[in-house]
Length: 75
Image (cartoon, rainbow, N blue to C red; front, side, top):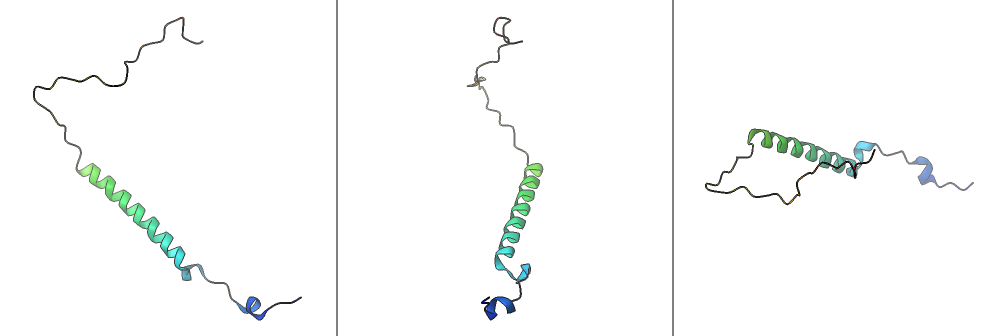
């Protein structure tokens, strides 16, 4: 068999020496920290209820729910 000296003498690289691993860990950590800060901000500052004086209630774009009749109901 023909083996080169490079493949037999090379030691495997440790995971903490690979830059891409640290990039993934930093991105994951930033995502977790950002998500938690968003939740904390949402809990500390709830949305204010806006009331417009002399405003009439507006109907929704969703049609009202109607109960199924006996003829169209499936058993």
